[in-house]
Amino acid sequence: MKRHNFSAGPCILPKEVMLKASEAILDFDNGLSLIEISHRSKPFVDVMEKARALALELLGLEGKGYKALFLQGGASTQFLMVALNLLEKRAGYLNTGTWSDKAIQEARIYDDIYEVASSKDANFNFIPKGYDIPSDYDYFHCTSNNTIFGTQMKSFPDCDIPMVCDMSSDIFSRELDFSKFDLIYAGAQKNMGPAGTTLVVVREDILGKVSRKIPSMMDYKVHISKSSMFNTPPVFAVYTSMLTMEWLKNLGGIPAIEKENNKKAQLIYSEIDLNPLFKGYAMKEDRSKMNATFNLTNEDLKETFETMLKDEGINGLNGHRSVGGYRASMYNALPLDSVGVLVDIMSELERKA
Ligand SMILES: *Cc1c(COP(=O)(O)O)cnc(C)c1O
Image 1 (tube, rainbow, N blue to C red):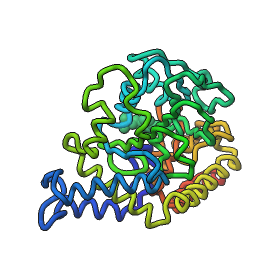
Image 2 (cartoon, rainbow, N blue to C red):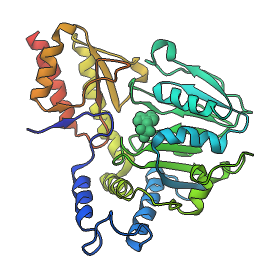
Image 3 (tube, rainbow, N blue to C red):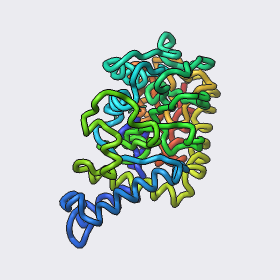
Image 4 (tube, helix red, strand yellow):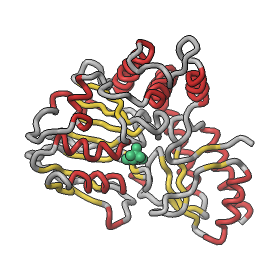
């Protein structure tokens, strides 16, 4: 049976990427596996350099003072690494979901954090707007896409201080002026590759301004000075991420994939809005194009709906426990056809009910 993978992360990757990645496990360099050769060997150093260059190229940040790193520890390690490297006195955080909340908690270990705005009281079903960011703070932190709640920032504030953004679940999915941001981070396992590496893109001139001593592994400057090879990098995750970025570049880069992502989002949200059996979770203006969250209006249909999903090979549609209902994650590699299959089931349910 054909499977349609709506999983929120780890999640769907392009088939051709997985084929190439699996070949490299068996034979990457004249009969040797990618995972058994030295990470200091030329074939792997070339992979790392290509991955770093592709990340900047896709984001349009080449030659603009940014460096790309592939680190370990997931986006969750960035919650504390950002604070260790940038937080001297006070930082402002926009609280739009579980992940922002966790980033705030981690940063609070080091210093004072001010929540510029929060949608926590509404269980994060919208993105707060119209808040002020004090210009004497060290940095402003936001989360571009809230994977769990299905909201997404459509615009970003003008900010006099460095802007840090967790783009784990929508990196490379839409065009933005990425030079607005001073530090972007994203765990690989949503739009880029397997779990195990985190992309960090940082403007070098914001670093080196805090007075604390930073442990080497937590110090962006150390990783930059070692070309993202301070210690053994997660070679498979970096290689697979490089393949996905190549795949995206060959498709036409972010502008091309954004068109596809818009079609997918349009398809699912119009069904959610037209079909009386379903109700969207997030406020319309803040809806995410990556993760669509919705509920059944009649819980009695739950079993029927879920059996239909299973019969058609739909995988990973259950909502996160803090929201319930359903979540259709439609990352870059998910074909429009898969959304078509899901939408057909939703309208079939309406005919049956
Ligand atoms: C998944 C996710 C994280 C956590 O990533 P890990 O790599 O598991 O630490 C952080 N932020 C956002 C927005 C996410 O979607």
